[in-house]
Length: 97
Image (cartoon, rainbow, N blue to C red; front, side):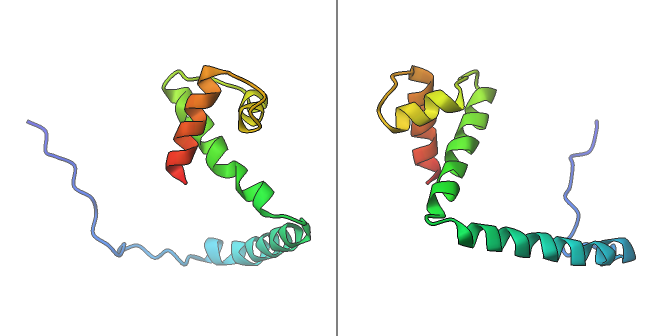
């Protein structure tokens, strides 16, 4: 009989701050600073951020064979479309919020 899987203890016993990881930090820091600057330049940054739950809901619903397009989703948000799949994804996104 196989033994049940057991998660390892936290914190991990291996060293996470390796030389390779530390060498990547400056580039990651620059990329995050650039992204922060670009987002600050958007007049209403919530327009960008509010689409993330909708995209997550779309991708998660596709696993359950509820397939829709971004166009259908955005039309449903504006009440311009009546796709049942898009409406289901909207309900999923509302639950995420």
